[in-house]
Length: 147
Image (cartoon, rainbow, N blue to C red; front, side):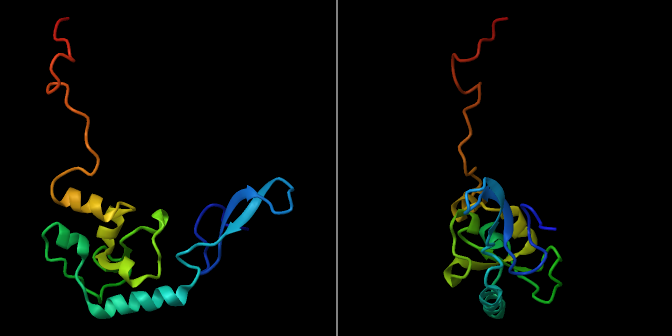
């Protein structure tokens, strides 16, 4: 049974999504390659090279923390090493480019999601990435206090 709209159970298998068939028979399940698993050996080599450099977590460093990563922790531990793509793959980043890869803790990478580097740096500086609307009290005359 296909895994519709989710991760494949086997490495390198494509995602299955609904789309137009090439034969023109209407909508059916169409395979879409997953860029994270399409070439596993290239990804693993990049991950091994980044692990060998022993760099600290770039997100922790942005927030002023030491960011030391214990590379001996098991993969599912929150503070274990994880490869982070600076330009998220979902936003067009190259999963194999070494300039797009950085070391992070697993929990930091999960917190980041697909935020851009600029958004993370703005949050680290204490500013929101997206400007907030002005408060009602700061906009004079816009809120009536007369009931």
